[in-house]
Amino acid sequence: MSTLRLIQATLSTISIILIFFFISFSIHYKPPIPTYTNKTTTIQNTSHPYTQFSLLIGIFTLPDKYDRRHFLRLVYGTQSSSIAKIDVKFVLGNLTKLEQRVFIGLEIMRFNDIIILDCHENMNSGKTYTYFSTLPRILSTRYDYVMKADDDVFLRLNPLALSLHPLPRQDLYYGFVIPCPSMNPFVHYMSGMGFVLSWDLVEWISTSLIPANNTFGPEDKLVGEWLNRGNKAKNRFSNKPAMYDYPGTNGKCSHELINDTVAVHRVKRWDQWLNVLNFFNVTKGIKPSKLYNL
Image 1: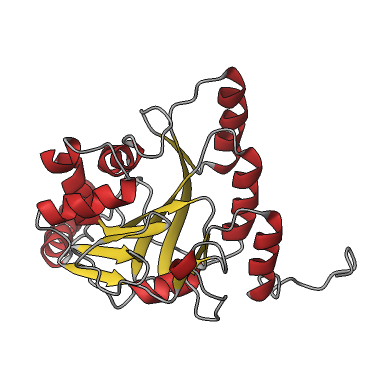
Image 2: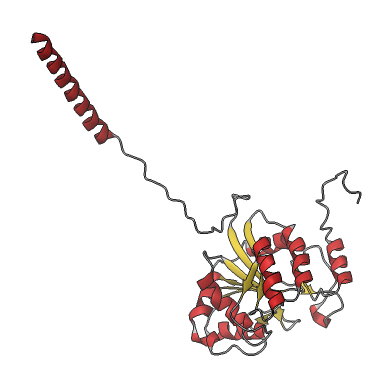
């Protein structure tokens, strides 16, 4: 009987010690705050952990221009920037043919780099408005800047990023001011070859009645009118002479290729593309291999 009492007393003592231990532990131990992974696509470029901003480039093209898109994927897929996360997408209007739905469907499955807007394909009848006004609704995350570019422009992504880096992230309108001799971006508007808006201006276009009620006409000129009427884009930057038309194609908007180039416009023929890509030595990074002799 005494042995049983001794066992009970020992168990009681152990229980008291355990209770004291758990009370003490709960007082001094603070569980870590759980972290949750954002499953939405982020704008952070994990390959370059020090990126400073993000840029979406929407290249306006036509559904049937399959070869041009495949070529531009090579041109932009071999470029990068250590200071910016840059996404390049091809922007189309509504598809109208079975072959487009099938072939472009394959492109989407393979590359996931196409935006199809809910508008008929056009140049100056609302496609640009639909592009900017739609983005805040369809994107899973915001970008710092959004660019509209033509499919006959060669963009050098790292120089583009470097030129944007010191500029404001708000209320910014960037490009090549028209008319060609002008150097004052506050008087006229940016050429449709490629212009950049900060995200807040994209959001404003998506909600304001000023652009919604004025969508027909030269698209680049209209954007300048929207911003002027809305008293927007107090930060404007025209990147001349780094942006220009291909030599000999457009009078005062053209000049010879230069090392500090950000964009060359009106590159339409294959011989022009060859000249541009060769001038900037775009294949200099190719790695030696026994599989080819270049």
